[in-house]
Each structure stands twice: as structure tokens, then as C-alpha cells.
Image (cartoon, rainbow, N blue to C red; front, side, top):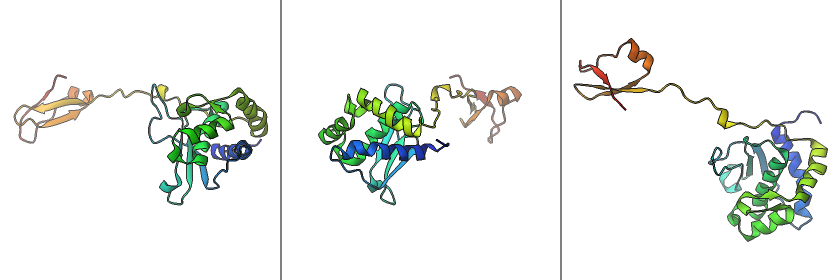
Length: 193
């Protein structure tokens, strides 16, 4: 398959997932938009990370359900499982949370485990491999590894005027060149942290 964007992939994938819902008597809303993007919170949590999010149409200015898949995942089985989880929210309504209506639909389409963090059944993984990957390939994305982000190295140093207690912050470079004179005429000293 020619190169497609992540959004195009998610749209095609949702169409291939549709029979899982339809065959169990569920109707998928037509007003869904799919994207790869950071969730509103919990994207980089160490113990608990949000990898997908479904926004209700009531918060969209054009009344569209918004489904986001986090850029922190790229394994196709996980991405499709997350997409399916978020589609369940769209089908049963966000007001159901992860309670019985959500669970009934999630189990019916091949999700299992704790409903707030579902996992694919082996049958769902087979479906993904044989239907989705076979037809549209793997998810065209390389995950963001936020643990590799360069840490800030410059720390601002606090200096206080000895006469009026006016506080400034500056880098070590400017401390080494010499601290300025305060607007009151006093001298700045470095605060010990």
C-alpha cells in the first residue's frame, strides 16, 4: 500500500473494525474524527499512561466525536486495540464510562481485561493480523520516546539585593562575569539553596 498518513490509516482501520460492532448489533456513529495526538492528561505518566481518548461530540464546535491515539505507541496490535477501545466509547456514549454498557460492547468486539485498560483477545489479534495488517499494513508511525528527551541543563541562580531584598535570577555565565548593581544602588549576593 502506498504511504498513508496516520489519520488515513486510523480511518481505514475503523472501517475494517466496523463489522465487529455491526455483527453484534451495535451502530457506529458517522460523526467520528480520528487523529494521532496527545491526550489532555496522562500522556507521559510513569505508572499509568493514557494512550487513547474519546471526546464527546458535545465538546466539538462541529458536533464531531474526536478519537485520539497517543503518539507514544506504535505497535499495530496495541494501536488497533486502543482504537477499538475508544470506538466502544463512541458507540455506547462517554456517559457510560467503563461500566456495564461499555463492558458488554468491549467484550463483544474482542477486548478483555480491566475495562479501563483493555487488552486484545487472541482472536482479536488474529483479526488484526489477518484483516487489518493484511489489507492496509502496519501503523505508519514511530512512537515518541519521551524518556529520551534532553533534560534541562541550565539552572537559574537566585541573587538578592543586600539593601532592598530585590530578587533576580541569572545563569552561571552572568554570575561569573559579574553581578549587576540593583536599581537601589545595592549589591546582589548569591542565595544559597
